[in-house]
Amino acid sequence: MYFCKLVVTHAAMKKIPALICCLCLSCGLLAQTLSEARELLLAGDYETSRPVFAKELKKKPKDAALNYWYGLCLYHGGEKAAAVPYLQKGDKGRIKEAAYLLADCALAAYDAQGCQQYIDRYLLYGTGLHTAEIARMLRQSRKIGQMLQSVEEVVFIDSVIVHKNEVSRHLPLHPACGAIGRGDGLGLQARDCMQAFVYANEKGDRIIASDSAGIDGLDLMAYHRIPGGWEKKPVGASLNQEGNECNPYLMSDGVTLYFASDGHQSIGGYDLYVSRYNPVTEGYFSPEPLPLPFNSMANDYLYLVDEQLGRGYLVSDRRQAPDSVIIYVFLPNEVRRPVQGKNRETLVRLAEIRSIADTWNGLNADSVRLALQTAYEKAANSFAPVVSEPVLNDHEEAFLVRDDLVYHSEAEFKSPEARQLYGRYKEVENRFEALSRQLEQSRADYQQANPQQRQRLARLIEAMEGEYWGLQQDLREKENQIRALELEKL
Image 1 (cartoon, one colour):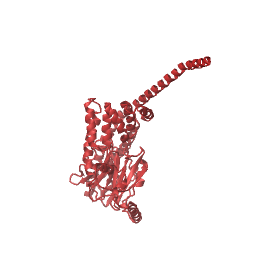
Image 2 (image 1 turned 30 degrees about the vertical axis):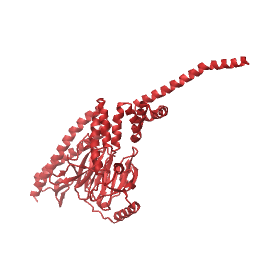
Image 3 (image 1 turned 45 degrees about the vertical axis):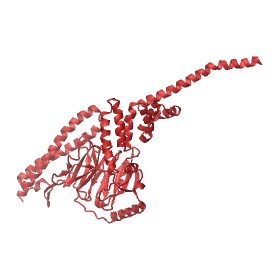
Image 4 (image 1 turned 120 degrees about the vertical axis):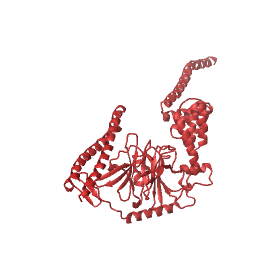
C-alpha cells in the first residue's frame, strides 16, 4: 500500500520539471506576443496589434500603458470616440502623447474647450513635438467654437451613399441650372478633390472648372466659348490660393459662386465656400466658409442648389468608407436661419447630420421627395435648351472680325497689312498649340515621375508656362491689331 503510493508520488515528481518548462514557455510566448504587438504598433500596424492589447486589458484593465496602446489602435482605426476612455486612462498614467491625441478627439467631437484644455496639458510636458499640428488644432477649435453657435437650420429630405466615381449621376439638375460633370472634353488634368467636377451653364458656352495650372494644386478657371475653341482665364487670386480649389457651382444670377477648397484655413480637409463676382474689379470678393452643417471636420466636396426645383445637394465623405461619399438632398433657405434653443449635444448632432430625420420637424419627407422628383421629370421633358453656336473643328480656320463676320482663310482679308500680320499670327498660334500639348504631356509625366525627375520636370514646366502665357498674350494683341486693320478697309 505504501509502496504503491510512493510509486505514484515518485511518478508525479518526475513530471514536475516538464510542467515547469511548459509554464515558463507559455509565459515566454505571452511576453513575446505582447512584445511583438508593441513592435507592430510602432510600425503602424494597428489592426494586427489591437486584439493582443484587448486580450491583455481583460487581465489588467487599469494598466495605463495597455489602455493607451489599445486607445491608439482605435484612434488610428478611425474610432476616435471609442478611443477616448482608453486614452484618458493613459493620460492619467502621465503618458504624454495621450493628451495630444485626446485634443484631436475632442476637436473631432466639436468640443473646442476640451481640445484647448488637452493641448494646454500636453504643452506642459514640454516635448517640443507636433508644433504645426497643435497650431492647426488651436485655430480649428476656435473656428469650431464660433461656428457651433450659428449652425444653420436646414431640412435634409434624403441621402444616398455612392462610389466616388458615380457622384455626377446622382445630381439631377433642372436643365435651366446648367450641368455638373467631368472636364475630360477640355483636357483638364485634375489631380484631387474626387478628380474635380466641372460646371457648365445651360447654354454650354461658359464653363468653370479646376485645372492643374501649376504643380502645386488645382485652381479654378473660367472658360468662354469663342470661334474655334475656348478662351481660358483664372477666376482670380482671391479664390485661387495655396492648396486646391475645385468643384465650382455658379448660381443662375451669374454672380454667386460656390466651390470647395482644402486651403483658406479650412476646419477639416475640404471645406465649402461662397463668393460673389465684383464687376468693379472684374474679380471675386474674398470667399466665406459655409456654416455648419454644410461644412464639417470631414471632407465636404460639393454644394449646389437647383433654384428651379427648390432643392440642393451636399456631397461629403463624413462617416464613409475611403471609396465612398454621401449625397444629402436638402431644402435651401432663402436666408440663413441659425438653430435656436437647442443644447450643445443637439447642435453637434445637427452639425454632423447624424440623422436627417432630426431635421424634419414634422415634415412629411416622402411627400416632398416625390413632389420634387415629379417636378424634375416634368421639367426635363419639357425644357427646350438654347442651342449655342457649334464649336468648329480644330483644323477649321476661323477669325472673328466682328460679330457678324468670320473669316475662314487668309485670302478673305481685304487689308494687305492685316493679311500679312495674320500669317505671323498663325505661326504664333501653331507654336502655342504645340506648346499646349507639350505642357499637358509634361504635367502627366510629372505625376508618374520619381522625386529626382520631378525636380527637373518642375523647372521645365515652369519655363513652358512662362512661354505659354506670353504666347497667349501675343495672340490677343495680334488679334486686336488684325481686327483693327481689317475694319479700316470695310
